[in-house]
Structure formats: structure tokens, C-alpha cells
Amino acid sequence: ALHDGPFKVVPLVGAMMRTLTLADLALELSSPEPPVLKALRQADVRALAMSEATNGVPEEVGRMLTALCLATGATRVLDVGTFSGYSAISCALGMPEGGKVTCCEPNPRYAAMARQNIALAAGETCAQLELMEVSGTELFRRVRARGEDGAFDVVFVDADPPGYEHYFEQAYALLKPGGLLILHDTLWPEDRDLQFGDHPAMRALNARVARDRRWSTLLMPFSFGLTFSIKAICTPEPPPPQPAQLRGSGAGGCDPSVPPALEDAAAHRASCDAYIGWLSARRAEVVRELAELQAA
Image (cartoon, rainbow, N blue to C red; front, side, top):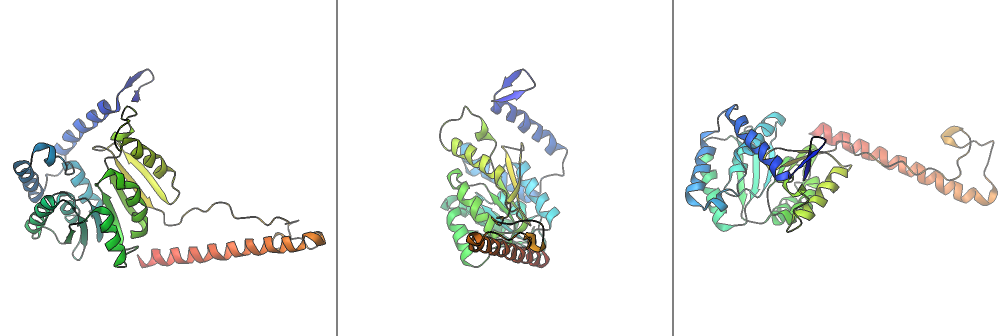
């Protein structure tokens, strides 16, 4: 449950229903849905039971993916769990010539629908779409095996909730510095009344993601909740190890006029060496991060 004002408490579900209702209004005041996506949604409703057809991302999420890819100039996108292809095509519509969306769908029936929809969208997008009929875990394994670490601008995850923690870690390796990870359907589990299924694990992941210093994270009350995590360009480091026996303020922090006791000399030297080693390693990391940023 959530607090609505200083006195009244309302269920999170009720608060989210308000947001979803506002999303319908927002769509009415936005650019129209591309015909290829509208046709895809209508085909899903005709071919599938409603409980299945709603497995795809909502229309507003598709618009958001297109806008983000367009605004960031994304050329490489990973879509984990594309269902019938709506999310992958949405990304491709916002990408330039030469861009590529790599996506997966493990269910054979849905994958066949996605292939058909991707073929129909070929004349509407500039970007290439690659579909693998595998799980999210296998998708990450294959892409990393191809040597594509650090190659992606955006990773979008709308797959099996138990895999989110694994996908979160794998996405860090695949994204460029400054790249964007989007996790779908992350706010609903924050209702504390949901103590079954994957909801408690998702709440724990939300808390962990928010504290992870490798990312800048924002959970938006958009659709069923979207977590936006931007891979840090320069990861903050914990305070460096300080030499145990530093004295005074001479060169390097060691004042030769106040030498350590003879019995402490070895420990003092080792501590100084460790500090210098840490500085050298940190300098190498900064040089590497700057080179990656320039290359991007």
C-alpha cells in the first residue's frame, strides 16, 4: 500500500490504475501509433486469447522505446523477451540506417508471430532486426560469446521475472558507458500485499538496483513501472586505503623529520606501497574509461 496524502492509505494497485488511465489520455495527446504497430496489436488480439495478447508491452511503452532510441541516437539495442515483436519493432522505428535490434522469444508460437511481424515491418524501419528463438539467459550468452561486450546503447527487458537479477548483471557488461537498461513491470511488485510468486524477489531486486553505485537509476510510475538504469561513465570508488603510518604533511604525506619507529618501518613501507599501487590502478581505470567514452 501507498500513502495518498498525510492521512489516507490506498492500495498500490489503485494508485497504478490511476496512472494507467492517465496513460490513455496521454496517448490521445501524442503522435499517432505507427500503422505497422497498430496492425500488430490488432493481429495479436485476433490470433490470441486476451490473457495472451496482453503479454506484449502496452502501446505507451512502445512509444517510449521509439522516442528513447531516437533521442539517444541508439544504433545497437538488445530486446529481451519480444513476444510478438512489438517492442523490437518499436525500437527499430527510432533507429538510423545501419542500426540493429537483437531480440529473443523462447516460445515457438510467439516467435513465429514475431518473425512474421518483423518481416512485415521491414519496409518501415531503417534498422535490421535479428530474432533468436531462445531464452533471455541464452540470448545474453550468445551475444557475449560473439564478443559484443560494451557494444549496446539500450537493453530492454520484459521477460521472466526470476531472470531479472541475472539480466541486470549481464546488461552491465553489454552496455557502453552511458548506456541505458530498461526493466519493465517493476512497480507492481512493490505492493507489500503481494507476498507470493516472484513479487518479493522483485522488491529485493528493486532495492538492490537503487543502491548499486555502478548505475544511476530511476523507477518511473509509467505503465506498470519502468526502471531506467544508466551505466555510469565513471564509477565512484570507495575511499582509498590510507597508509597506516603516515606522519606529517611532507612529500607524499610522509614527513622525513618524523620517521616511524624501526620496528614499524616494514609495515609503513608496505602500506605506502599499497597506497601508491591503488593510485596507479585507479589512474589506469580512468584512462581506459576516457578512451571508451571517446570511442563511443
